[in-house]
Length: 394
Ligand SMILES: Nc1ncnc2c1ncn2[C@@H]1O[C@H](COP(=O)(O)OP(=O)(O)OP(=O)(O)O)[C@@H](O)[C@H]1O
Image (cartoon, rainbow, N blue to C red; front, side, top):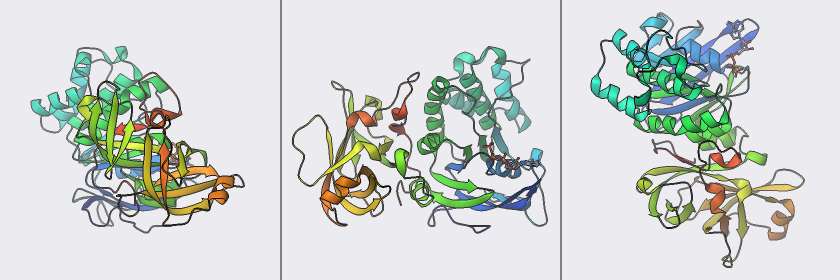
């Protein structure tokens, strides 16, 4: 797709409209997309696909032809070009560039002072949200990488931007610092009423944070829209990492077993790694296709707690050995689907047909959240996050 706009969600007001084209040396960029007025839109793509260039152009730091409209304000079109310092935006880079000679406290007030003064209520809310109260008197040199990023975020937000631009804010951090900062980003995402454009080449990060996604390849938009259907359309939901992300509410929490019961379209789904305070909150549940098995009969009692009733949507033989089954949990709206990655042998033996009802078993422990400091493929099992109106599946 080139230069053609695809709305992220047709029925919701969208407040970010970008259409940019031009050359950067030998590199040709031609992108157009729209994003919602609130929530995280990921700019996702391989290295060199143009993500940072798009972000810089939105900020006015990179001059390209086209249009940038944010929250009803036009920053660039055929006739005008608002210079970068007049654009109300917060920019968070890979490495936080804090002023070294002043305290954290003075750093976070810097942006706000430039834009008309510090609002004490907003300040204390953001300080609390990002957990930086104990850091306020410190010098930036005495912060860890993750702490620096949280301070940079606070500074950006307190400058009262119309949009937050984040360029791989976690990529310079180790796994431990990443795990430490992600929950803060999730809380931020739930509380901020401005759009966030979030550059990343890390799919797991995008799945955890983004509502919408613009997939870039070679300076063009390969696919754009709500997270789940777009990942699928872009062919990013196949193979080893195939997974589905659904948003649902926590219905109950069993303190004795430390298990949360998620209400997945009327069916219970048990997950670990939650807390009693999550009851009533929306959770983002990532179900990896390799952790889902299928059976026609109600499964015999086993150690697997989750057996979702689901309807087969389609079966695709993806490789010589594998098949990917798309399923709609009963009670789920059309298009809200999960995936099961099974052997081709099983797919042929069972010959599942579209419309047929089956039981999809999902291991609870495969859905567990990871504590800070641990590493592994399952770290993004369950992530708190609001349902900001993007369908969690198409
Ligand atoms: N000012 C410039 N002059 C010449 N070429 C440029 C300029 N800025 C970017 N490029 C080129 O444009 C292409 C896209 O770069 P960009 O940094 O936007 O990609 P990216 O997707 O953000 O990559 P990464 O994930 O590695 O940061 C690259 O080939 C880069 O070398």
